[in-house]
Image (cartoon, rainbow, N blue to C red; front, top):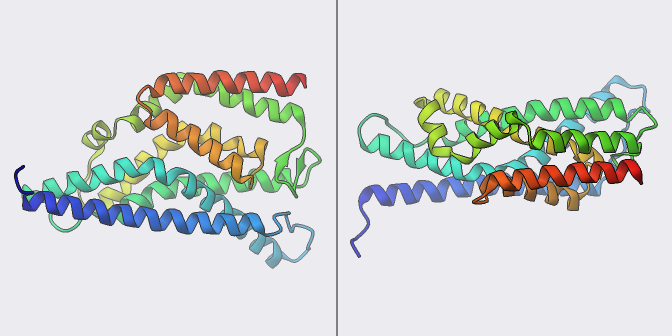
Amino acid sequence: MRPASGLEHILWRDRQLALLFLAMLWVFASVYLLNSAAMDTSMPGMSREPASHLVAAGMLVGMWWAMMVAMMVPGAAPIVLLFCAVHRRAEAGGTLQGPPPVAAFVLGYLAIWFAFSLAASAVQWVLSGSTIFSADRMVVEAKWLAAALLLVAGAYQISPMKQACLAHCRAPASFLAAHWRAGALGAFRLGIVHGTYCLGCCWALMLLLFVGGVMNIGWIVLLTTLALGERLAPRGGIVRQIIGAGLVVGALGVALA
């Protein structure tokens, strides 16, 4: 076996650093999420103090964003590692200088999920003032709404838009070749573009948190597994269709229960 070249040592070092960065990010988000689940998660909107509303809104957004980080970072790991490898090879070829701007790429990716967290938090805040949502359990109680969310998610699973977004997420090499930009700003933009495709893949599945419980850890693990399965499994297209069919059947089951 030939000895590893200097370039391979550099690529391996970057792979280790990127994995460490992603692991620390995932652990931080998971700990925050578990602490949030252990706290009183009812909406403290009963107070008339504006400061109380602001703190409650901030905590709600933080909880959703931590949840999105914990659920999405494992699926983003392959493209982050490939980004490091491509950057180092370009650096070795003399077209780039400096270490890969991994943080900029990941920050751009997470910015998209922060925007989603804002929207999801707003939806939960509005629902918490109605009788169709349990603020204590953070789950919709109206069967018609739960069935509708399952049906929408199932129909979206087999839609052309879902298929197109998933194709980008399942082909990180082609994605990088098509959207590559140099520098930290280019990496941030690349992360935003990839995060947009990722959101296009998973937004409907993420809305199902309202069906199984926003802070239901078992439900969170299940949805994360489904999202990872369709993205990383060898036959992801079939997995996508199976998930869609299962969600449609689940919607009918809830409607008829």
